[in-house]
Amino acid sequence: MEPVYDAVITTARLLWLAEGLKFTVSGVENVPKDGPGVVAINHTGYMDFTYAGIPAFLQHRRKVRFMAKKEVFDNKISGPIMRALKHIPVDRGSGAQSYRDAVDYLKRGELVGVYPEATISRSFELKDFKSGAARMALEADAPIIPTVIWGAQRVWTKGHPKNLGRSGAKIMIGVAEPVEPVGSAEEITGRLHKVMSEKLLELQDAYGEHPHGEYWVPARLGGSAPTLEEANRMDAEEQAAKAAKRAQRDAPDGES
View 1 (spheres, rainbow, N blue to C red):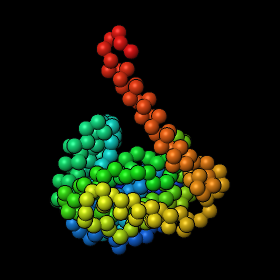
View 2: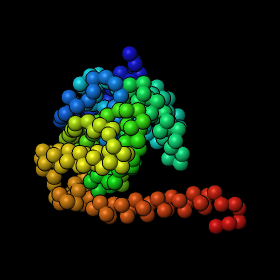
View 3: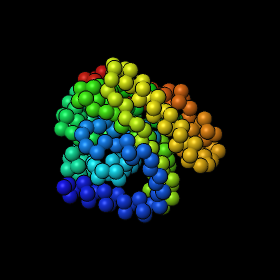
View 4: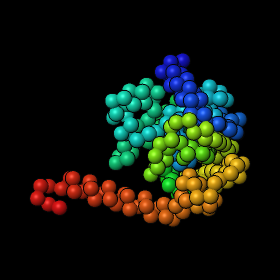
């Protein structure tokens, strides 16, 4: 038993009820009853990880250990909670330790949640995937559980205000058949991207209306979200600005 994790789940359910969120969950039979699994999640909003553990808990009362940025663990409020839930801190400047921790969790039979896109997709389309999920699946001999969420961007996403009140937003979660760790990391990553792309289209088709011009609707579906190419450019510009800021901060006095 994990009383802290159980309490967090109860609290989350109460919050979702207060927000009026409407969940549709499919494919829970694809979550393994026991043993390791890399839960690969698409990334459209800040609340994705709170929804991504629903299928495993619904089907087998299993809990997912999520990889999350180190800053969340450094916070005096969220840090103790994240550590109590046994989530895994990720230092983006040096990810080797978090990778080893994730593999160790998998070898102990845990479910580990990862974002192959690494960062939120401003376009709400799938970005290119990093190979970390495939590499850890290979090393731990664990299946990858493709988990796609659609609608989470309506609650809170990058570049837009939070919508944590009673929004009544519809959120769909679909779990595809596991991707087995067979072949190279690049081959597995390619298969994973294909499976998750197909699942995303399936959920979007079943979602219902995507209002024209809405910020949370992809450009492909008539929304005002940037295209994938535009979003990639925005991400590159943001990373360049952050790098320049770090360089200026770290420069010796008198240099610019």
